[in-house]
Image 1 (cartoon, rainbow, N blue to C red):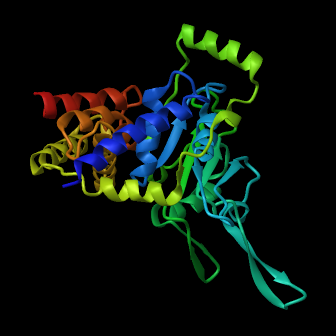
Image 2 (image 1 turned 60 degrees about the vertical axis):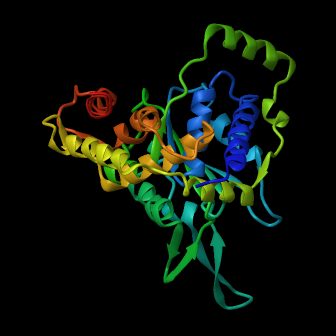
Length: 318
């Protein structure tokens, strides 16, 4: 049970946070709310969309909306390319002639928010360097394992229409992303406002000021862990996972990790709505974003979003 005043405050903060990010990413409130949900819930996000719709801007806006303590690197961007090597992102031990010992030079993973831009342009060897960091929030180089920040987030982008020179993400890595989101093109009226606004203010990110520090975000995560989930909903979600494993069009069904991410996100989603308990609609709202990208399909013409929507409808709606 969470104090009703705290729940109401979190609900208000959620609206303010979305409105602030909306200064840079216009007309995409639902996307932004889901993006924040994934981060507060402790998950990573894969943003898949065509170029120029604001994928990179969304991550930079999130970084601009929070503040960290002195000395902590809050945000780093990695441009994934075919010539990238694992130690380019993890860091490497370098021999120092002065001290005559190996000293560790941190890679860009040692920050809170990591933008993995065009992640599918790096080789599988480099992509696999992210697996430990995304799941364990640690990085192992040589014989030493180093911890990352508890709020460590990988926000990866990829362009689904341009496949030349790309390496599809392995299923094991896709399963580590809590959500796969898409921005889409803006509505006509909103796009006109964007064009007019940019003609007068070329850098919208400068308008975003920090709303929270990292400790406050950790407190939000702590409150979400106390959101109540009825066992009936757990049983229904379990049926959805099982349907994916028994379907003839699916070669790889949903993992237990997918169910964990689903409920973590639903708890945060409930708080944004001003509740300290999860309802059916929370799971319905997030199901496609959390589950669809994890499916391995036996048929190339099968649509994972449609499959997940059908299973959720059958179980939750009847």
